[in-house]
Length: 86
Length: 135
Image 1 (cartoon, rainbow over the protein chains, first blue to last red):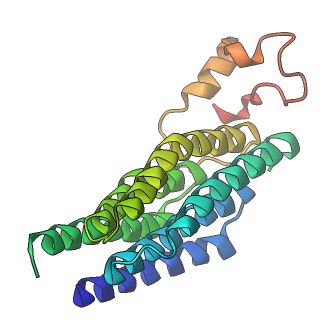
Image 2 (image 1 turned 60 degrees about the vertical axis):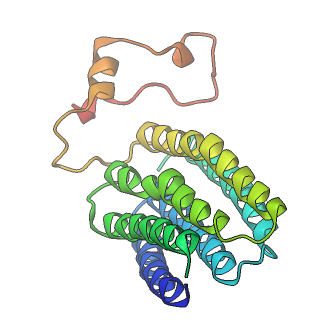
């Protein structure tokens, strides 16, 4: 399981870096919020992989909070984009 | 190394592979909507695969319940959030890629077809339909 976790963490790091790249470069605000959403998914996946590695569910509440907060943030920024434009 | 570990490893690696492809799509695709197409795949399927893999490795039953709660929340919220971002980006006039071959919303706007949401008297605070330069 340690090897699987190492490969998974490596993949998640690559995915997270690509998301951060789009977050920095993204021409519009919508690009950035899409990248931020994907980055949150990567973070949640990382916490889940770590929980699978240890077999202990210490941080699983963080997953629930992160999923809910990510949704609230995405919806708020979407409404902001719609009211402001660009 | 028992069967549960092997299953968990396969599920986790599959979910992580989806996340990596989403990152590649975010980096390579030409406009917001193509990027959303790739970025919203791991939001449901990828995360569910990773969480299911983690659930097969948990020692406590309560931890499995928490993972199932996250899966349920994600299935409820991810499509709604992606839909709202896509709609807001389109209405705000985000540029489409030159490679876009079909824009049915612009065609409907030009033809005067209005969705229920933009019926007169509804949401007056929102900007109206798209300008016509999109066709």
